[in-house]
Length: 195
Image 1 (tube, one colour):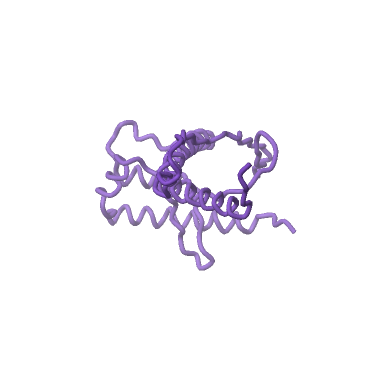
Image 2 (cartoon, rainbow, N blue to C red):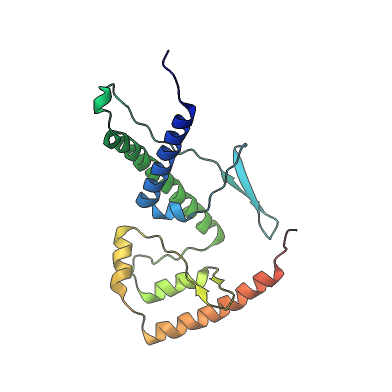
């Protein structure tokens, strides 16, 4: 029987996991922005909303699979290992992105945070309608912390092509943010702190 090297194996395992996680964050940046936690048991998670409603989040699996063929040890290079890890990361990124988008679709429709342009071209009014539907966060000094926008390539190009907002759009955005800042302060003042 061949000897094993537990410390070396643990180190390699950690390197592999770190490589896959980094690659997933590169391929699906939105996944890297989501805070994660470990849930040691159970088949779902739930959040109790302010209204008392229990919002269950199903646990879904994301996996990646590779087949590693027997090769001469001299041919089993770091480059080959990285290719296998990258293949797994691509599968994970695709699976996690699909789940993320599906869940965001469900949640935004459930709370009524959807703006349907009904086929009209993207414009600043649609964008401002979207901003108006959202809750926003503000820093301690009242500075707006803009939301992260996740868009497909076509929409990202339209956003970039839209350019700067008109003076009227800027006035509307300012009015929206004043209301949202007041809402944010009220929410923060009403929070029940654990402790």
